[in-house]
Length: 428
Image 1 (cartoon, rainbow, N blue to C red):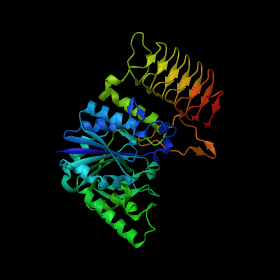
Image 2: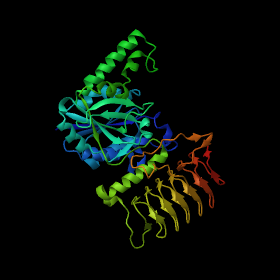
Image 3: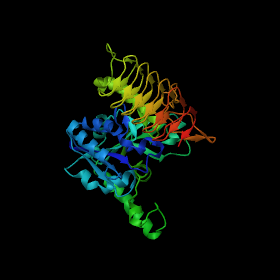
C-alpha cells in the first residue's frame, strides 16, 4: 500500500515554553537523546513498509539548519523528505488541507499525521494493521493512551466502544472528567479525511460571510476560514459516525512542551535505544569514562576517563568533559565545556556554554508520579505564587559559569557571563 507521512512542526511563534533553547534552533531540531527531536518521527515513518515520502509541514521561514537536516535525513533514510511551508499558522487540519494535492500526489492510499512535539514508540505499523481490520477505506485511526483522571483534562479525551474501539465522543481539554483515554497526536488518515475537513472549511466560510467579525483574527475572512483544527473542528464532528477509531498503546508517550520535558523524553528514548539502536548507547571501556545506565556520547566529544556519566545523559558534538566531572539526568549540547570536578544534575547545558571548575549546576526534575503508571509529565506554568517554579536548570547558548559557583533551579538566557551563585532565578 503506498503511504505517506506528514509531520506537523509548527512555527517560530509556537514553542514559547521551550525558550531560551528555541532561540538558537527550531524546536523540532532540538537534540533529544542525541538526535533532532523530529528525527525520531522520521525513523519511525521510514520503518513502515510502503512509505513513499515524508513531508514536514509548518510555517518556519526557509532555514539553513532545517535545510541541512532534510538533506542529511534523505541520505540516511533513503526516502524523499520535503518541507512544505504554510503562509500562516493554519491549524492542525488547515495545513494538511491546504497541501492536500501534495500529500495525495503519487497515489497515496493512506497517510500518517504526527505532531512533532510528542515522543513515543510510534506504533505506526500496528495502527495500519488495526485500521485495515476496521474497513480502512473511509475510517480513520487516532493513537490513544491512558492518563490518570486528573491529568486527562489537559488533553483531548476519547470515549470509545469497548468492543470495536469506535470513537463515540471526543472532547478537547474538557472542563470535567470525560475519559482516561487521551489523544496522542498521531493519526492515520485516508484521502476521505479531506472531504470532512472541506465541510468544516465551507461552513466556516459561510459563517464568516454572514458575520465577518467571527473567527480567528486576521486581515481577511478567507484566511480565517482556512484555520481548521483537527481536534476541535474535525474529530468532534466525526465521533459517533462510525468513521473514527482509537488504537490504544501501552508503550511510552509524552509531550515535549517545555525544555524540562525534553530531559524526560530523552530518558524514554535512551531506554528504547537498548532495543532499537544499541550502537548509540555508550559502554564502559578501559580508559573511557564511567558509564551508569543509558548514556549517549557523540563520537567527537572528548571525555576524561575519570568522569562519571549517567543515567540518562546525552553528550553532544564537540563537548569537552574534564576530570572528575559528574553528569546525571542532563543534556549537554554541542561545543559545551565542563571543566574539572563540575557537577551537572537535571540540567540542559546550552551550545558553546562553559562551566568552571568545581561549579555545581542543578535543577529539580519534573518527572511524572512514579507510583502512578498512567501519570504524564505536567506542563506547569513558569511561575507559581509569583515565584519561579523549581524545575530543570537551563543554560542558553554561550553562557559562562565561573568556578566554584552554584546555580540552582534557574534559567540563564544566552550570552550571559555569571559572576555569582543564583537560585530560583531567570537571569536576563
